[in-house]
Length: 144
Image (tube, rainbow, N blue to C red; front, side, top):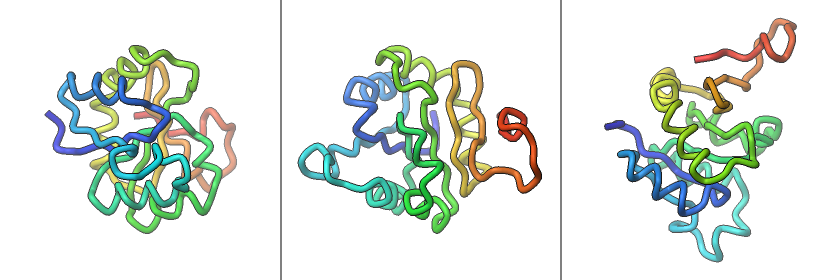
């Protein structure tokens, strides 16, 4: 059982939360903490809400890595965020991908942040912050 608790954004849905719980994950859904299905909640607000409670954010939207103001809670709290690198996955595929990556996710959380990681089909890859030296995008990522 993981010592960490996770905060799921709206895009992952109830089914992913239920599937992760069935596998022993402790998860909190954004929609349980904000009104109107969290439709009007900026990313930096829900991230800070969860991070203030020690919860690790999981989401589908990797665009956050390129938005400074949305990454700010990760910087302030030296935290990590994980996102699925494919937004077209079915619910059972999302659950399976997180479950396969569980140990790598745990290691990255223990390592601390700030950092953003992509959960791919076969690995968990750090995609932000980028290395200060110039390398190709693929070799710039740190795999766990």
